[in-house]
Length: 265
Image: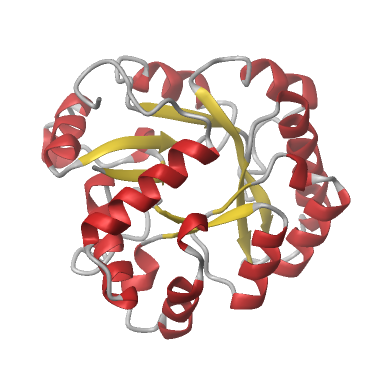
């Protein structure tokens, strides 16, 4: 069974499923993907997202505000802690730093990241970290705020081996998306080859970053199998081994019971 450790199910294009979310989930199960972590981006859409996934025991969620989301409410420590008091919330985030589009709001991003780390430490749940063109500074803040107490994952990883190693030294896992299937991602594939198996995760980041052969089209969780195939080829391993390893890592990191009630057990 495959696991998609990072997706945004409330944003996936349902056109091919006649607008029916349940059909998406059935197609995902049929492809052998039996676990998903639906990651929050903001607070405004969080309640609807939480309701959407509630009937599906194989889907857990996170709570947080993405570093690029500056138009909505700023999360407070109390809000994050309160929302995280829910057994389906297994992580805080996604949070982090993103300098790809500039640094005009970087001070606000830094403060937001610190609030998320404080919330994660208070509730004892891991962090989901987004970092783009800001790896060293992201790690600096994680160190300053004591993020190693809870650990987490550097998701959709695109940085260097040095950043990956420093993140792992802080207790973070490294998650790879469909980007590793892109022709331009040779250096990233080398990082994926070197990450220890016990720190390895896979994801789609749906509906974004569809892997080859679906690049340029809407992404969805069932395409995580292509990420697994790419990593298996890099490491000379069977896809089933990558599926089993990343599933075990996912369950351990997020404190999820191996079995769930319903079809995903």
